[in-house]
Image (cartoon, rainbow, N blue to C red; front, side, top):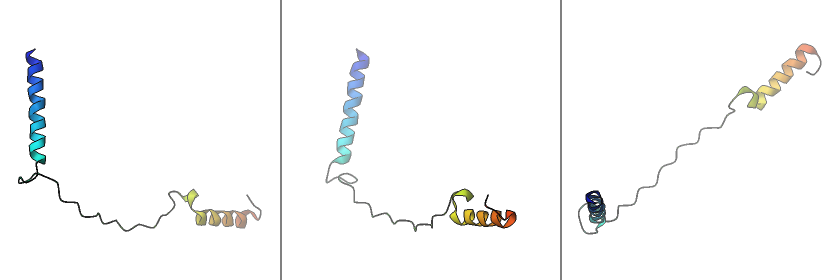
Length: 73
């Protein structure tokens, strides 16, 4: 029973503190100033993640294979 009373008191204190912090007209309370817009980072050029994703690499590999064998892979 004592635990339940302490729990109710703790919840009431938290609610009162939250309301006091959000009360307009008080220093540090009320609505917050809007955040300035975030500047976006310059986009880095996208590149293949692995050699087998790179079309240029695959063309070069195909060209070398044909040159070495004289026939397609």
